[in-house]
Image 1: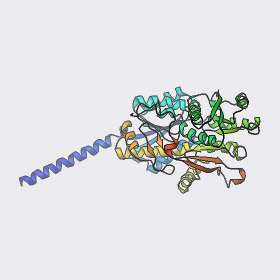
Image 2 (image 1 turned 180 degrees about the vertical axis):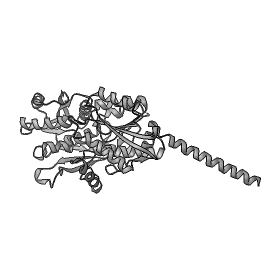
Image 3 (image 1 turned 90 degrees about the horizontal axis):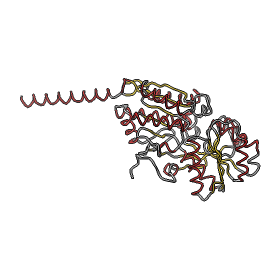
Image 4 (image 1 turned 90 degrees about the vertical axis):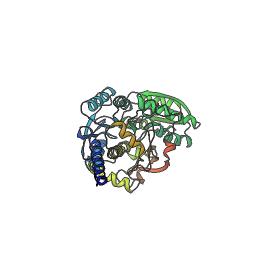
Length: 407
């Protein structure tokens, strides 16, 4: 009887402990809600590649997850950072400190993303980067709670830059957006061009959102470089390609290399202007049945094909929510640790992994823009010409400066 009584007592203690641990796990969801903030350019030159489309992708991820995680509601808020680092930093502080946002997502414009990363690092809050490109985000400016999800300037350089040099484009002149993203893209592409046996003849820095590229295009023409590398994005890429056609750069024997080109850019340019352009991307809506199924749902809501940034937002939010579910916590360091331990598998990424520095390693793809006669319907713009394995795509020419990386 005494033994039986002890056994019953032990069982009761064990049950109580289990209940207590369960209660603690539930209590680790702060404020009884998981709040996600999508911050990006909602009205400017990057609105098409990110903007409301990224917000919709995040909403899709939350809805597909069921709207709750571990019994707690998932909420979404949005903000326009206006492509200004001071505005982005102020929003991040307001969200993390006062609005109890657990994770900020997207943030195109690398100078803004670097400012938000500083705030997130100080507060040990999660930052899931889909829109920004600068490889410094997982290099010298890396963060223990920052995940650079979709692509970066290294992968663009190793994709488009390498392919163009191999095809004979061995002399380059860069037209570069004059902020962190453009500087990083020119730097990383120039390193690949040089390592591949090519030569950089010069570059010119252009203010963000410049309407008139004429003086910069004249400098590119005067350089006699075989390749005019566009280290810009969004509206700047569209304007520079359109005006280059007016200047007759290609007719004069030079070729344009768009180092960051999105499907929405091609839609604005038209296939007649853009056909033959090569580009590197983490995603194209018409790659396979999974990408087509997800993209069909997205297009029904947004009325245009998703960019890789928007698809990446969905993937990042889903992986983040799965990590909260598995860890029982929305603490930044805890969740990111679980995210890094878990392989990435979704409609756009297979067997991806997150490195210690926060870089997601996934395959990238080299595409060529179709001729008008080869397009079979709306948004049928790309043909895939190569798969670039993740380890090759994200290999840094000069090593990694991230202080989190051991050795």
